[in-house]
Amino acid sequence: MKYLISLFIVLFVGGLIVGYAAFVVWALSVAQMPWWGIGFVSMIFLVLIAGLIVAFFARIKEVSKEDKDDYRNY
Image 1 (cartoon, rainbow, N blue to C red):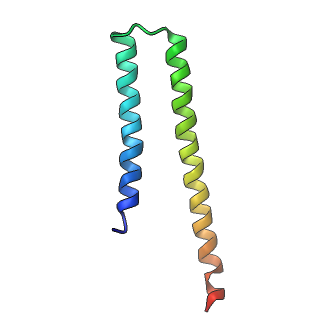
Image 2: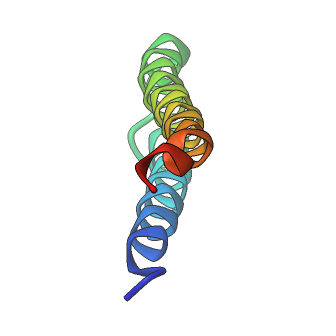
Image 3: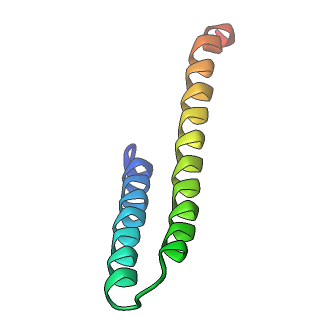
């Protein structure tokens, strides 16, 4: 149970990456999507991944702050 959230996060991010790769292959081969359309979707994907990374590091900073101040509770 301890690592269940981490597993879901890894599966979610992995699913995003695999889904994006499948989209690019589909857009280039089947749909003949223009490059600017693929670039636009790529920017949305990059913003989503950047947001996840920022949230991850903010959570790490919050957890490490809790560890330092935890001694005051005793």
